[in-house]
Each structure stands twice: as C-alpha cells, then as structure tokens.
Image (cartoon, rainbow, N blue to C red; front, side):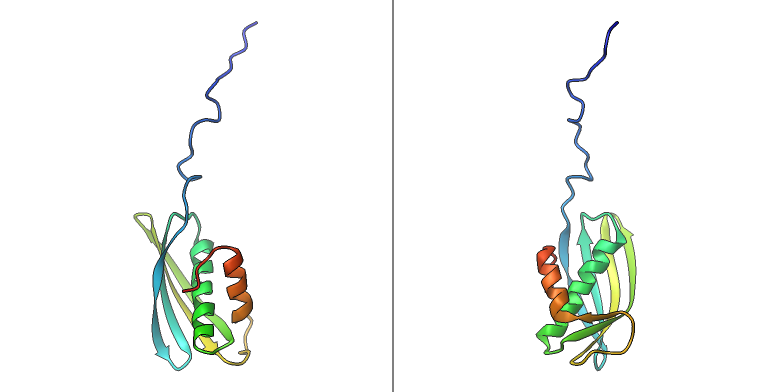
Length: 121
C-alpha cells in the first residue's frame, strides 16, 4: 500500500495571513460644537470592525487632546474600494459623561488602543 505525502504541505503562503494593518491617517471635520466627523483610511485589513476600531481610537485620542474625557458614538459608515477601507464616523466629545448607550471613556479607550497597537493620532 502506498501512502502519498507532500513535503510541501503547509508551505503555501496565504496572502491574507501576511497582511499587516496599515493606518493611513484621518481627517477631523467639526460639524458643530462637540460634534466631530472622522474620516479614517486603512489598508491590509479584513473586516469592518478593524476600521471601526481605528475610528474609535482616533475619536478617543482627539477628545483627550482637546481636554475632553468622553466621547459618544453617533454613527459609522464603512466602504472598501480596491483594497482601501474608509470609515466616515461621527462622535460627540465632551468633558463629562454624555447620555446614551454608546459612550466612551476616552482615557480607557486610548489605553486599550495602545495595548492593541492601534494609533490614536
């Protein structure tokens, strides 16, 4: 009985496995006092959650840089074209805990982002 084995099994590289997230920066647009629109861009990711996390990290960092300790997520729209992911996210920022269910303690979020190697600026 012959047993077929492959010496190269497991050696084929998965191109997605080698992908490294690239954080391509953001633009912050002031909609109103305390209401900010963040436009963020990434490459080398596989899910909407990854760019949404980046937008959250940017919003928390932005809030802290301006002396505000809190943010509240309003909405995030995500699009992907030719391997480039874009998020259009809106957050409120404030010095006190805002009302609502999707509030963020900016200091805690920034610490979590640092632990996950996600930039906040």
